[in-house]
Image 1 (cartoon, rainbow, N blue to C red):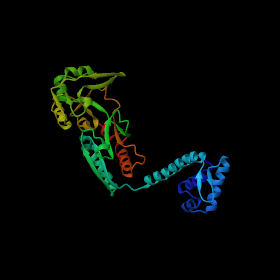
Image 2: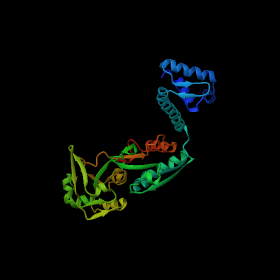
Image 3: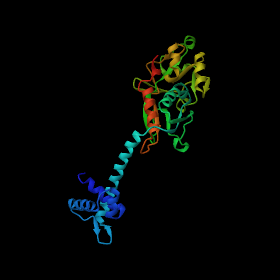
Image 4: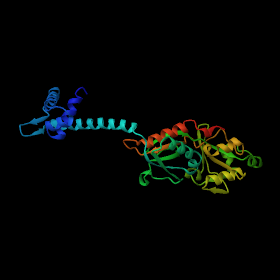
Amino acid sequence: MEHLSEMMTFAKVVETKSFSAAALALKTSKSLVSKQVGALENALGVRLLNRTTRRMSLTEIGAAYYEHCARIMQEIDAAAETVTQLQAEPRGVLRLTSPVIFASLHLAPVIGDFLKKHDKVEVELNATDRLIDIVEEGYDLAIRITDHPAPTMVARRIAPVRFVTCASPEYLERRGTPRTPQDLLQHDCLVYQGVPALRSGWRYVVNNRDVAINVNGKCRVNNSEALIQLALDGMGIVLFPTYILGPHLRSGRLKIILPDSVANPDMSLYATYLPNRYMQPKVRAFIDHMMASIGPKPHWDVF
């Protein structure tokens, strides 16, 4: 890249179609522009431009060389714009979506603190368990809890999400405590209908082996708060993440069972967004704020 300056001058000459116009755009003299193009041709050992008193045109080699020079100039401009974007103050409306109960328990206070720090940003939050297409529906950011982020999105891992199997002391005293995932088949399990992965069965890893259990239960619910209340009332066993169950585990109203079986391994909390060339400052700032507020060791796992 020792001839970068000459390459940029040559590209500007081609774009403006004259040495005079290139000199004006580069804020230099016509003679210096001509000298730089000549030096580049001498260094390459080829003629890039055909010059006459009336017109200028690219040679065949010059046309091919210009394509590379133009791409390099675009990358230089992109690098400068990236720096500008990084330094820009977050502003505008940030549209994001999140699972309902995570939004109410943990995202709301994060948003509140974020808005206190960035008074030129507004937030529109759609709390829903429906899987939203952020391209179709015009969102900047989606909070996802998954073990496989969509390959078409950029996903920044905020924190691990730990699932536990638990029940009330009353239920365990009445029905006994399961020792293995297979023992769940003899128990009443409370099935959450809001997550497809939990409808068809509960998945564990035991001694490095995958174990899938098609659990039985009299109650299937699509509302997490109602399902937890049923568990608190001693109606069955529930499999849920600790970011929901944390307070009840700390109080002792729910007890973890199957501690040696890892439920739904590799689940994590992600901030996902479109792979745009330049991340908007408001999006970058919010993701960084989430990481600082929650990850990588979330407070809800302390019990």
